[in-house]
Length: 363
Image 1 (spheres, rainbow, N blue to C red):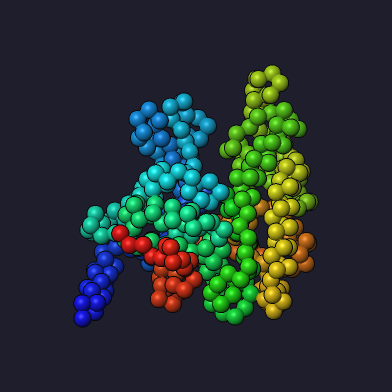
Image 2 (tube, rainbow, N blue to C red):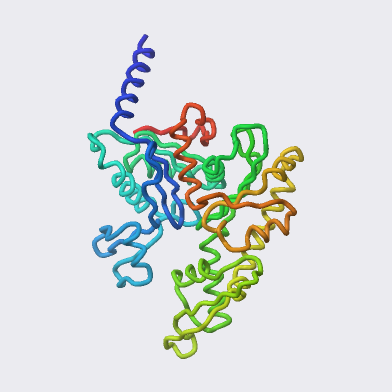
């Protein structure tokens, strides 16, 4: 009787909480954090960057304002990313960043100070139990009523509207800022997957190293990213592109301007692109034959910011012999997938990460 009363009480509380709060899906990315509010869609897309004053320990800026400070701050102010390779590297800063994002989208709700939202967070498929716990604890301490986790490739597949609950193979390649997630999904579960610490950030580092070695010029992360987005490609193209960049001459120490072509950037990114393509081929080799036939029919789906790289679809198709297509609005795939799960939670909750050591943790 006591157990029944407790369950009834819990159901009533959940209904009251639901009336005054919104479920929130978060793509907690290394480069960007996207927030999906159930019933409203994606309401926030900001860089995962926090600027902190090391003298006082105070947060100076979060998100877009902090991103503008990268490489331009005095010695006592550091613009840092609290996530490295898709996992929490600085727990306290991650917690403050999550709290900022949650409060920003939840503050308009009546009684928002007393009622906390249910939060679903997308994480890389290869993270450890300790890393999962760090994300859960950060979300809980940031004000989540209930915190759940979902594999990023699963969330991206749902966001791509792939039939993940059916008995058919769906292959997705989600290239983000810190990790590349490659997975084959069927019947609401991941059949085979790999999580690579080779993604957008590594490509930026490749470009920085190339410019240093071949042009004797030192450039920053933001310049490398502009080069990657503006003229970068993974496969030769008829159109020739180039871009002027400025940096510090490593020989004289003075400012220097050089003209960089798309072939240079392709050469710079070749090693990392080769790692991604080889891993895709490995996943294909490990996939059961029946699911491979489904993938050949459906095609390999590219998602994430890295999936937008020019010619990447042609490179993968040429190497694997399979059709490759980019999903629409691939940058928001994981956040949209998390939102879809929250909006149909009863039917899709089995796609969430299950772990005896974690489980849904309530505040």
